[in-house]
Length: 283
Ligand SMILES: Cc1ncc(COP(=O)(O)O)c(C=O)c1O
Image 1 (cartoon, rainbow, N blue to C red):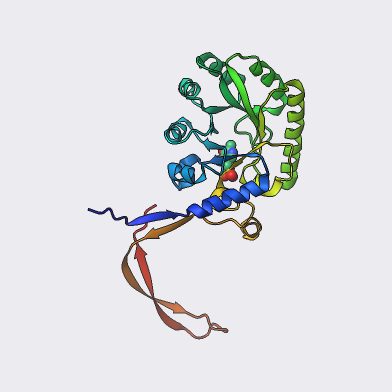
Image 2 (cartoon, rainbow, N blue to C red):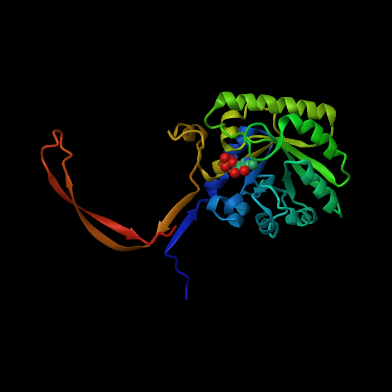
C-alpha cells in the first residue's frame, strides 16, 4: 500500500541553498559550520545535511548521537557543540569528532583516552554566555597547559554571543575582548587553529568584524529565520527564504456563526458565518 501521510513538512531545498549563499556573501572566505543540531532544527538531519553538503565546510551538532548519525553519510568535520559526557569521550576520540571543551579536566580526559591520533578540540571561552567555556581570565593559562598535551590538537578557539540580536554595545564589547584574547593566543601559540564567534544574529549584524573569526556557526538563518528582530526588516536586508512549509489533510469543515460589530460606531451587530477547516496536524 502506498504510504499516505496525514500531516507533513515540506522542506524547500532551494531555500536552504539560497540561505547558505546569503551566509557565504556575509562571511567572505570564512569556513561555514552548518548547525544541524536538534534534527536540523526539526527539518531533518540527514536531508538538510545532504542539501548543504557542498555549501558548507563543517557540520555542528549538539551531541555524540547526532554526530554518529551524520557520520554514516558525510565525511565533513563535525563539531560537537554541546558538552560531552565523560562516557562518550573515548568514542568521540576514536571517531574523530571535534568536541567542545570548557575545562582543563575535560582536555586531560580526552588526552588520556585518545590512542590512535590526537583529538582535535574546540576550546571554548566564556565571554558572557555563562553556560559553557573557560572563564576568559583563565583562558590563556589553560590553553597553555592543554597545548602541551601530546594527544590534543587545538582545532579552534571560540566563544558565544548571547545577545547579538538585541544588545549591540554588549556584543561589540565581547567581540573586542575575544579579539584581544585571540591576539594574545596567537602571539603565545603561533600554531594553526581557527577562531569562531558568530552564529546567525552575529553573522547578520557583525560580519564586518573580520579578523575575529575564520569560521562561523550558522543555524537558524539557514532555515530562513532572521533572529535580529520581529519586524521583518532584517529579513528583507538578508533576503532569507523560509525553508519549511507545513501540510495536513483536511478532514472536516465546521460552520461557525459569530457576532461582529466592526462598523464605524460599533452600533450595528451583524451575524456572520464562516467555515473553519479542521486539518490533521500533530505537534
Ligand atoms: C554553540 C552554538 N553556536 C551556534 C549555534 C547556532 O545558533 P543560531 O541558530 O542562532 O545561528 C548554536 C545553536 O544553538 C550553538 O549552540
